[in-house]
Length: 110
Image 1 (cartoon, rainbow, N blue to C red):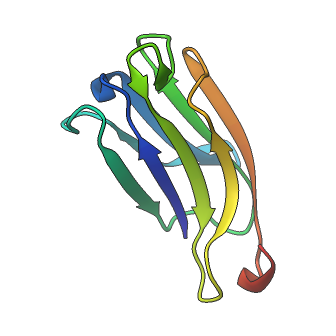
Image 2 (cartoon, rainbow, N blue to C red):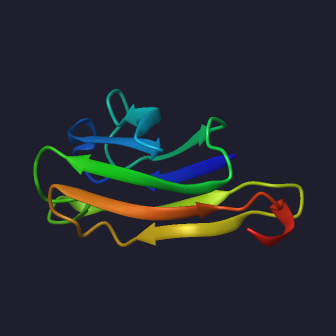
């Protein structure tokens, strides 16, 4: 399971994201209906072990930090041995940011 923890700026409705693996979008979400400045945890269970990617988009082209609030995000692999950070961002990414992920088949060694 992969979890996205995202703190939005003042315009969460501008933000959307998706997880992709082997050319297929596995899961997607957005900040629509999230109050400005709030934090959201988004969990996806569709990702298999191996390479995957995460793309976040901001239609305002200013990321989630810093002109209109101080957002950021972190991606974790959740497993019985404790969460392991896969990637993170300070939120300064403009319109698009892509993170490459490596999902381990052995949850103890993500």
